[in-house]
Length: 115
Ligand code: HEM
Image (cartoon, rainbow, N blue to C red; front, side, top):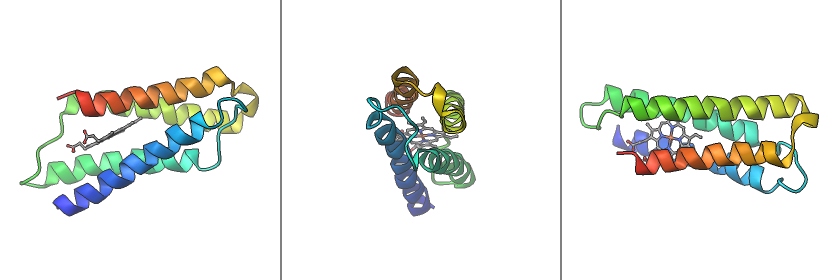
């Protein structure tokens, strides 16, 4: 169970890295980069699966649900911004991308600093 959880955490982190990297590299030529939506969905799904695996296992610590609620809310906003930005490219500005990157970075801080 621990190995499964750790593999999911690796995919979770790679997913958010794709969102952050894809967004920051396009700040000067604002658009939603190819792959960013897949990164967001991968990270969202793996995040939910990690919660499920941790809840099911007797050995793993149960996740802090208040922290998960905050992260899930922010992640859903990030994913919605990515979807809207892909469908309506004219809406995507440097500020729009900075919003996606800022919310993602804020969630990294919540993930690591909230105990
Ligand atoms: C922008 C969105 C998100 C970012 C940037 C993010 C980032 C991170 C980071 C950096 C970690 C590793 C640090 C740690 O283990 O505490 C982590 C772990 C984790 N994340 Fe996320 N996350 C996001 C969204 C989510 C969502 C939506 C869920 C669940 C619904 C979730 C569930 C988890 C869980 C369960 C862990 C493992 C914590 C543990 O080891 O006990 N995350 N996340």
